[in-house]
Amino acid sequence: MKIVHIVPGFGGTFYCGNCLRDSGVVASLKKAGHDAITLPMYLPLTLNGSETDEGIPVFYGAVNIYLKQFPVFRHMPKWFEKLMDSPPVLKFAAKKSSSTRAEGLEELTESMLLGAEGHQSEELQQLVDFLKYHEKPDVVHVSNALLLGMAKKVRDEVGVPVVCSLQDEDVWVDAMHPDHREKMWQLLAEKGKDVDAFIAVSDFFAGVMQKKMNIPNEKLHVLHVGVTPDAYAYSKPASDPRAIGYVSRMCEENGFEILVDAFVLLKNNPAFNDVKLKATGGQTGDDKAFIHKQISKLKQNNIETDFEITHDFTQSALQDFLKSTTVLSVPVLNGEAFGLYQLEALASGVPLVQPDLGAFPEISKATGGGVIYKPNTAAALAEKLAEVLSNPAQLEAMSLAGRKAVEEKFDSNILSEKMVGIYKTLI
Image 1 (cartoon, rainbow, N blue to C red):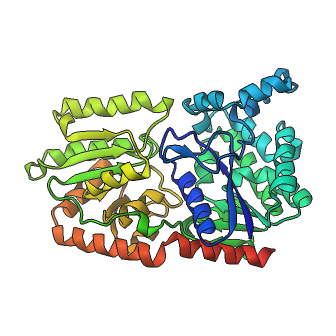
Image 2: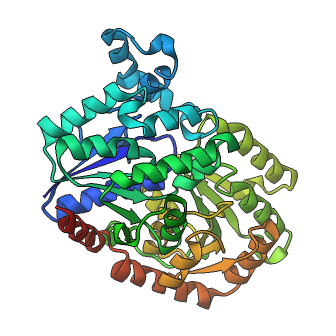
Image 3: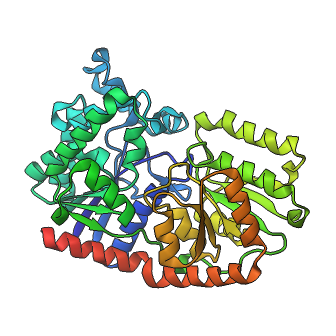
C-alpha cells in the first residue's frame, strides 16, 4: 500500500512528540513492507539530527505562507519565493518562536483551513500535483486537524481517502484570541466533513475532539501512540544518585516551572539530598528568559549544582539520559492528548509521575508504570515525588510493568498494522 503522511516540520529545535510519533508510524509502515513516506510542511522535519525522507521537498514553506497573509507579498516573483523556501532560510525560521505560538497567527490558521479559498491556494495546488503525478498514493494521512483545509482538494483531485490524526489541536486553537476561537472550531467542524476517518491518539482526546468538531461515531477511531520496544534498552530506575527526569520543550505550558518549584520543595527535606533534576527537550526563542528564571530559583536555593540540562535529545542521547533517571515527570499545565515521552520512559524502565489531567491517567492505568497526583501544583507534585522516591519496591514494580506494557500494548509495529486495517476499510 502506498501511504503519504503529511506532517508539520519543526526544524529540530525542541522535542516534538507528535512529530516523532508520526515519523515512527511511517517507519513502522515501511518495516511492514508498505510504501510510506513523510511529506513535511512549513519547516524541515529534522529528527535525530537528520532530515527524514531525503529528496522530499518542504511544502507550504513557513516564510512564504506567512508573507502571503499581506497583500503586498501575494504576487512575489518566483525567484523570491524559491529563496524564502531555501533550507538556510527555513532553518533560520525554525529558531524563531513565532511558528510555535497561536497568538498572532489566527488569520494564517484560518487561511490554511480555508484551503483553495485561502491565500495559500497556490501552495495547495503544488502539493496536490505532487501527490497526483509524483507519489500516486492509495491513502493520504494528515498529522492533525489544523491541516484539514487540504482534505477536499486532495480527495477530489487525487481521488484517494484522507485520514486525519487528532493530537493536541485544542492547545493551539484555545490559545487564540476569543474573537477567533469559536470561529476556528466551527471551521474545523465544517472541514472535518471532507475527511474519511479520524484517528485519535487516546480515548480522552477522542472525547474532547468529537464534542468540539461534531465528529460522527462511524468516522472516529482510537489508536494509541506506540514506540519500537527494541529501540530502547531497559534498565532499573537509577538509584545512585536518584534523579527526576523531564523530557519535553522547556516552557511554561509544559509545566517545567511546576517541576522546578516541586524540586525546590523536595530538596528542603534532607532525605532527598542526593536527588538530582535532569531536563532535556530543547527550547525556542520564547523560552530563554523563562528558563533563566527557573535556574535563578535553583541558585537562590543553593541547589543549582543538582540541576543539569542535556541539550542533545537525539534518540541515542535520550537513551543515556533516561538510563540516569529514577522517575519522569512532565507536568503539562492542561494535560496532553497523549505524550510520547511517557512511552520512551516506560520502555527504558523509568516510571512516571504525572498530573491527573488529559490522557495521563489513561496511560498510567493502561501501563501500570506510573502514578497520578492532583491538583497540578508544585506542592502536590513534591509530595508524590517524595512518596515514590522513598519506595524502591514500588519503583521496581512500576518499572517492570511499564516495560511489559510497552511490549504488549504499545508496540508501534502492532499499532501501525491496526492503522493499515483502518485504511483498508476506506479504500
